Length: 208
Image 1: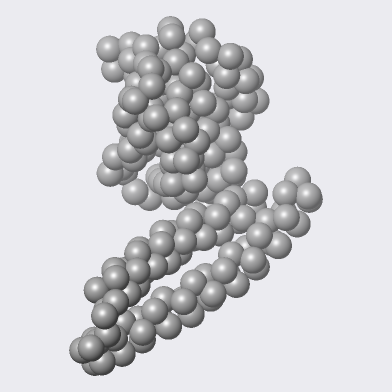
Image 2: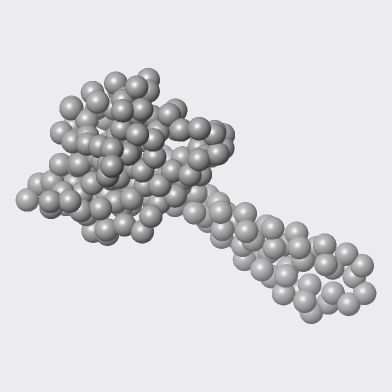
């Protein structure tokens, strides 16, 4: 726990510095684009240069999003008196898991969910449980599949629903045993999704 908090503090500091670097690149490339617009006449490579600046701007924005998600992870081991925000935890997890899913030719989609839902778990515990369920789903799904996640409220509880393979297919994956043990230790309910498809993780209520 102390190790995770220590590394979190270092990571948070580093992500702030990375965001400053990206902001500087964004401002500089914007200035170059403005100058190009004023003096591009007679410049044979103006179109290619402008296209390159456009690509640079896109990658800077991508980097800003990733560093924001990484910064959230840096604070994820911390305990909050109000409890972890489920939506924020799942959003960061999905954003940082897309590369792993892409390696299996799968697409992750986070549906617009119920905001403001909290749980007594720390954000890192929410991410660990949902991430393990995600691993199980990716193991069970064929290549080239879209996997939908959503945050909902059921019976006053914050739940994370993962739509994908059948519940029994999930239970047969190597990752399921780890998920079941994790859920038992953290008080997370594991239930079949609608029609026996996917899995619903019912998270414990926040401390009143």
